[in-house]
Length: 94
Image (cartoon, rainbow, N blue to C red; front, top):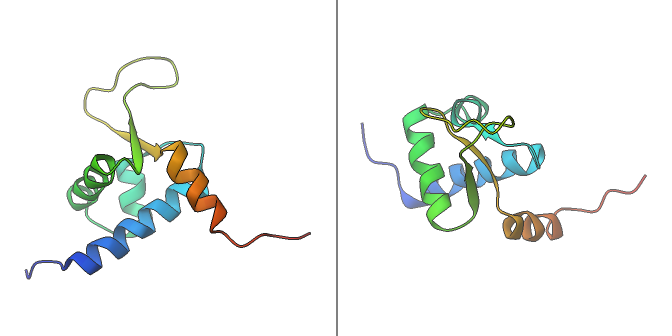
């Protein structure tokens, strides 16, 4: 399989951020994000970790009941990313 270009990785990462924005403030599991973006879970996890390094998203380490995850990971947008993304969304008028 040929390597994926940086431009394509950026586009896929952008899709993941858009999905997390649409689900915000709810955190989503890696598998759910992979399913929504039609990508392999390992590749999705790699991109999510890259986004975390860039402080665009945050890894949620505990369940809503306070139990620490051992094998699963949930993700959500960082507050700063959410605010920036929100400013760039078209305003909806009702």
